[in-house]
Length: 187
Image (tube, rainbow, N blue to C red; front, side, top):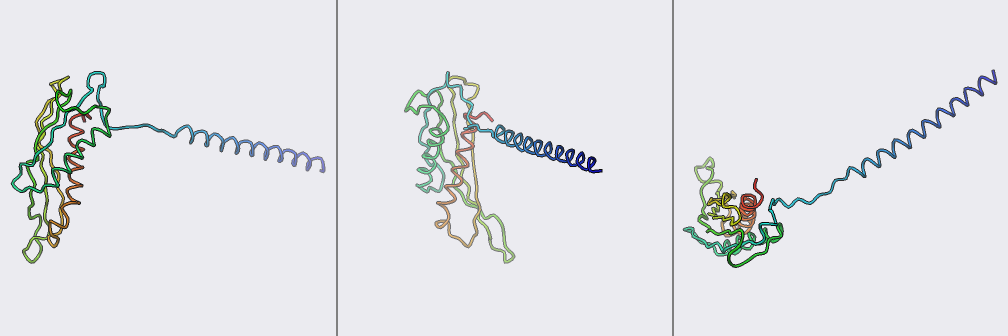
């Protein structure tokens, strides 16, 4: 009987030892898997063949809308140039660029968006529209002229002068993303 107990204890110790070894092995495998599965990549959204396309020419977009708010032009033009500087390796040039972007801000409009129970406007929609002409001198099949727009709504209890700078900042960023995607991301 003592011999059986000693055999059972030895067997139990052997099983426990193997279990601990398996547990350590499983934890090690999981740790290695987590470390090796850490994916890191840089995606800037552009699909430019830098062997063919090296320069970009971005013209200043004038405001041609019926309502002119001067900071809109400055904000839009700066964000547009910054997008190509930050997200591409293209060199900006004043003329004869491989890629050329020009156009104008054609719309800066407000509309009553929704009506409250008392019959008055409860929200106002502010919309910016930009006409863009894009020329790819390395592949004219990609040339286009297109309108891009974005809008935001704000409560009619707010004055446009109180909200327009923040709204313009958001809308110009959205329009610049649309232009960037249409010109160099080929989405």
